[in-house]
Image (cartoon, rainbow, N blue to C red; front, top):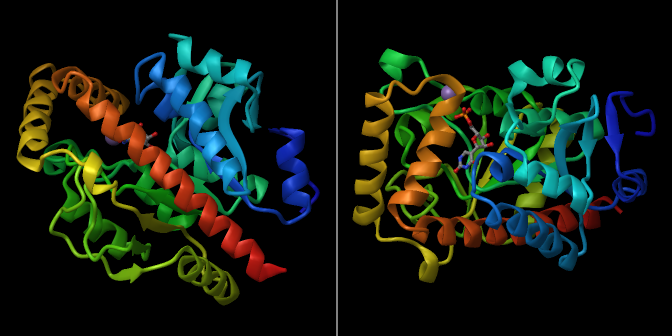
Length: 308
Ligand code: PSU
Ligand code: MN
């Protein structure tokens, strides 16, 4: 693909890698602007990119700046995103208006998938995806991430989803929408801070090459839509599940009492959990992102190896 969409601003290094069919891994930016406090967020962003490079792939962090979708950010861009207060959380709904109004926007899983697919990037690493929220029967709060996974042809590597969500219903939704979920060396869905949600995954893979083979087969079949790879964080870094679940329950309760709605819900909960655990959740969050970055880059490299 050499005719890129005119609204994409692709960093030269990323463009060259794409044109030469080398492994590129997309990264989202809402995790930087709305998912973690400063300065840990910018340190995380830089270290994640370095881990991807160490595996032989090219990182491409995605954000909205200067009226374009930037694919691949400079260190100055990362700082701007990490510090600025006026960064807008951009999901599919917000993409056109934030570009048109020349605002600074951070992309969620949904909008990062859209941008990655537009650029021809097949792999995308993040921490956790959005999903069906608890109490969705009343609020109808279902993340646009799930709908994007249903339609957009990108493989997303994550640590499952946080228990701020209704995990059984999130899995049902993915099944209904035909999204493949592959557990990396696990038979159960990891729940972000913990390795085990007691929900089984439909398929387990033992190596990055096996996952790359599924991606290649899906492509040959012409099946559109995303694929979700769920990677548990290392045992040594996982939090005690009763401890973290109590904190999550309390944060969800607070969000209800304070009447938090819409796109504010997830950032509110993430922030409260970091505060309530006095940073323990942040430490686990950092480790799991790095763990996902390594795996995502390995899958991308294995994929392009077989394409040669
Ligand atoms: N879950 C996390 N950390 C995050 C997010 C989710 O553990 O940073 C961010 C991601 O960008 C995700 C978004 O795409 O929140 C989902 O927001 P919502 O629930 O409003 O769709
Ligand atoms: Mn929502």
